[in-house]
Length: 199
Length: 390
Image (cartoon, rainbow over all chains, first blue to last red; front, side, top):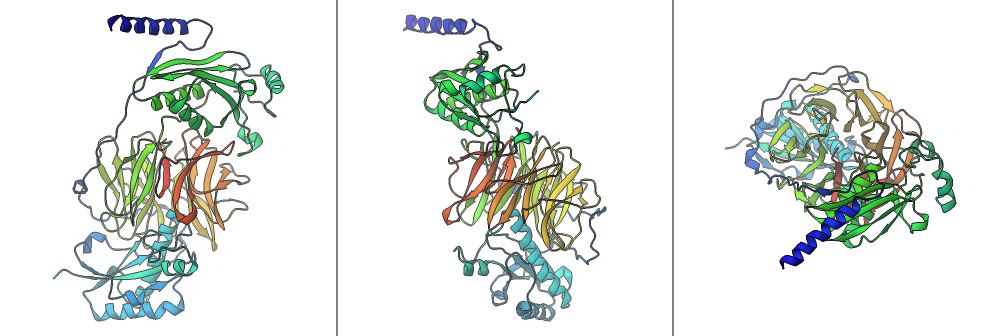
């Protein structure tokens, strides 16, 4: 055993020294590769507390002069009850790559507006969704644009802006996973979630 | 470093070129002369190295613009053995000079082979990428989480376990950390996670949707899309979320911001006069300017190369195409079908998403000058939105 080990060491030494002969730019050496690991995945509970909304520092940029209505801090209603069934029949649908609320859908938005005006303590969250035919971050922004277009219509109909929240799911929550035009049409939508204060 | 035009790589041509090499023995073709996607590969031969070490070298070097052939037609000769530890040499076939000769030890044979790939590439004056990492979004049913892996897809590790939609990873250049969005709090919010400690801090959590983070090249600031003002607009803040500043205020949706390497501009996708376009705005505020992408419609997901010379983006016209346009302006070059490119630190290799039959998404690597491409098959399942650590 020992002599074999010694022979191996001698062999390695020979290789190292042989490698050191001849014209070359860099010396032969032994390069050690360190390992690198990520830390363990943290638990959700380690998230820091949510701070209140920061002030806008709007400084230049392309101000088109259109009215943009800020959205309330989401922690305001974080413990409210959510009902996604009551307004299901009023889901709004959109044309490809568009966030315009079509006249055929205005009655649906109006129905939700009427409910909110008759139930002063309720609020609503509008969810914007896309079909998969777009890049992912573009679709996430487009879904938000769709939710905001519906929100703008609710505000126009007299609902206070503070009662309408928005959220985009981009293309991540299709109602129909098929890759057909009909499935895509169903997925390009805005849904209403009724928010009620905890009892 | 001087660069010379080079025609077909044949023995005779090599001899001619041998007499006009620059001092370091390197022949390289400037992509700005021939055009992206039109540069022939640099030819190598490899002997003696087999098995996993050979696979690693073939993969690593192919996506950096090298290709393998027999010894007579090769510009560089790689030889060695991989019995236990890797011993490898790289020799310039023309002037016979030795570029690298090393024995590696420690870690795994894969890691040793990656190290040799870097040593060879760096001996030619280039930046190596064989030890770099990528982050990406991996679908988990209706949810998704962020993973980090070696750029070739090995050593995958989960960064999040939020059990919701987690998406849009963006490395903080120079740091071992990344930003991403997560729906864990309900509305999508942007976080920064230090990968060494696992500590996560909140960057943006507001009304509406906070999405699409991009960290500046100095690792200090984040550009993002926030809709809290009533429309998805471009904002910037420090990495901890302080000093928030709004840069656009339009009814249209802005999306996918990215930084120029000098930190002066933020480029993003928007809509101008009814047409989707790329635009840029000064990072400290100012007027929005259009970034032309002549002939290529519906651009999105832009990213600047680290050397500042190229803007890669996705154009959607019937299919998705990975395109590049010079930062200084000029023609767009379409490279390959795919979307959502991210540059390697060498400013020539891209990682991007490719959709396969049935809608499944996978990651692939593209060498822009040669258009050589490899799928990252090691990452299975539905994976997308890659971000290359820089």
